[in-house]
Image (cartoon, rainbow, N blue to C red; front, side, top):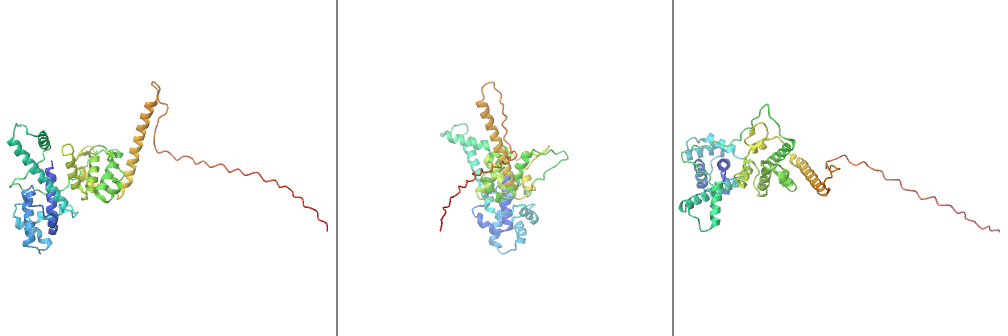
Length: 344
């Protein structure tokens, strides 16, 4: 399914981008207001589209007042719209957010058709077992994103939850801290993703949220979309809506928003490349150690203990051996030459 909070954030991103620059509505002409789930967002998008025709020359700083007046929604004034615009990601990729909104709308349509088919053929097996399995999967995944009621108040602009720290916080392992640093740098500086992903395979990260975040970052970048908290989190839920939760234990308490913490983590630009090399070396070293251990067990006779403890680690460089001096050839013996005596 598409998580309702993600759908609201995607819709707010579309509205926020359009509030900052109404010309961007030309990039999403296919997205009609009825495809948005929340009635407040539908009314705001309608007002924005209509204002392009009725008030094309209005100053940008006056757009919030104009849209608030046209939409006439309780609790939605110019200040609310400015907060919505400020909360929207400043990447200038309204087409990406519109695609996400459209995807959520398609899922709602599919769920609606499943409900209708279920009501018509309740208790009766369909003519095609494949269709039955598809319907069962759709019901299990809860594809639908609930559509808000008409009287539901306008949702507050999205704000990442601040990480709560305690005096008794326990830091995670150094290995996990390195993985978090790599993910934070890639999320904040996506221009490094292509270089790192060309040689850093996902299995270097621990199985779970860290590996899934890395895979989602790579997928979003390969698709040519902006790599940011919203798009990465959307891709994670899209790949596995049932098992994934954005919760990673980093202290005594669990922080509820792992991606938000990565986006706010102070990291040096380029740390991803350097630390990724360390992680890759550690993973290769561990794999070689495991492989050598398996070989030793397989080749050792029964009842014989291993005498050599194979340990692959970075040691000191081998001492330099100076080559032996070249042997000089023996001196050539000079044979005296006899000069003939010539008499005058």
